Image (cartoon, rainbow, N blue to C red; front, side):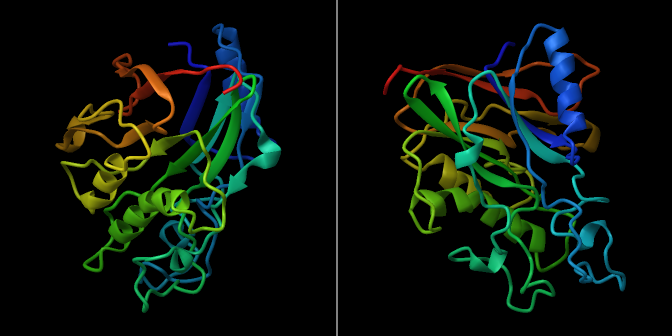
Length: 271
């Protein structure tokens, strides 16, 4: 695989970008050159000062804005052979969960006043895909809809993290919706299997403003957890972008459980 743009999740953030730079250097040594990179501080590990999980202690991994033992734990990043228009990026990661129209956060949630919606990030990141053609990457990594309790806090949050993109495309977040885009990231939700509010991902996949180039194709193998294969990672281009091909790259046996999801887009200069 030789992608022009790589959207990465579960890569640690550090202030100097050392981890991302090291990865880019390794890829360059293998013949893949990505001169453009983007990463911002994620919500993982950011303390809220609140005992969110009710265990009587504060400032632990499950009490953070997003689960994490330290700020930057398992963030997101983009590496690109095409220019990234970082100065025009919109970072929605600080949006409070309660401020999302139709938010599912409960009024008695202990962190109602401070809880951000994004467990990791939500970026609107424009890339110059071809001269005169801008495509915005809509990057996110939603919380797993499990590891909570009877109030389904993580399930509610996961659903809203996914739904944010449709709210943005509706023009209800005060951010102009992009003309051409690709929703890219890990939704941690399969439309047909596993726990979670599947109607959230089903609604996104059925949205007429985008394409689903890989319906039903799994992206992760959780056989060791007795969960089998599921579809949790997505690349969803806007309807105006023509899809040449798409697939899921089968990695070597020693690789992680998640697979590389790829899509080949037809881009026209000056469009």
